[in-house]
Each structure stands twice: as C-alpha cells, then as structure tokens.
Image 1 (cartoon, rainbow, N blue to C red):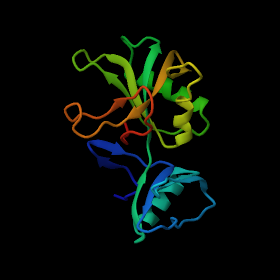
Image 2 (image 1 turned 135 degrees about the horizontal axis):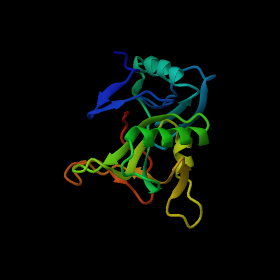
Image 3 (image 1 turned 90 degrees about the vertical axis):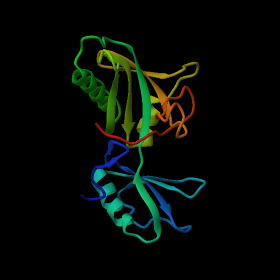
Image 4 (image 1 turned 120 degrees about the horizontal axis):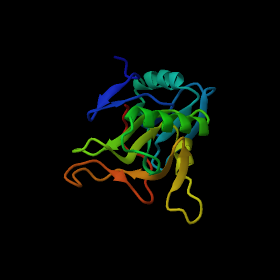
Length: 198
C-alpha cells in the first residue's frame, strides 16, 4: 500500500487530504512545485503547513517528501470539530440519512469542502443517536467557517437540511486523562483533533 493511500492509525483510518504538515531536518523550505500550492504557513517552531489544489497533488507531494532525506516528517493535516444537533429529530431516524443531509448541506455551503471523517455518536446501551458528533476537514478555512462565532455567541450555528448544528473547537486531552480516553469538545480554544475516516 502506498504511503499516500489510506492507512490505519490508532484503530481509525487516516485519509489523504489537501493539507500537508512538513517538518524539515534543518532550517529549509520543502521542495516541490509551487503552481498547485493554494496556501502555505510556517509556524514559529518551523513546521510548514502546505495546502494544495487537489488531494491528488497533495498525494504526489507526500510521496516525494517521504523519500527526501532533508524531511524529518510529513503527514496529512486534519481539522476536527465537535458538533451538537440543537434542532431536528434524532429519534427513530436512520444514521446514514442524517449523515447525508448534514454532509451534503455543508458541501453546498462551503465551496470545495472535503469532509474526511464524519461520526454521529450513539448511546452505548440504546444505540440511539445522542445528538452529538465529530467531523474532520482537510482545510483550515473550512474549519474556521463552522467555528466563526458572532459577538455574544457561545458557538456558531448552521442550518443543515432539517437540522441545526452548533459547532465547537475540538481539543485533544493529554494522554492518560479521563482513563486514557481521547479528547472531546472544548468550549473555547483548541483547533485540531485526531485524524480518522468513516
């Protein structure tokens, strides 16, 4: 299997996306063609965030950088958010129907939106939807769109078909916290979470 294809990490499938996170061994700039680069950003720690025009282009650059001796690490960047359904029927409904309505609506609202991962949470005992979930974008601009709170708002809300969703930043908890379970939503702050696909 190609490194650029889906791989399994921490029990979840990691899909390729349009943004790469690149760390160089020295204070260098990643070497790749610039015509398909949409946006680049270098953090204070020297990490490069590179957004490409397509998943296919990002995959090719991933493969190239994976074999570059000057590259310390390269991975796909995920931008995760937590959401709560604040309006709409979640009892006696089909999971796939709710998922399709929300995903299709977000794709209509956000030009070029690519949702790498989507999950509606279920009650462990009843198996019914709890009205909460997680999703992962592959561009920071899409994450910023659903987290763009107006003054006085505790969360940004969007109408997605028959449902109204409130979106919150997703904050990873330190390993071992809450009996080793992963992070959940954060009321404020935080940006990215674990990568996955469903």
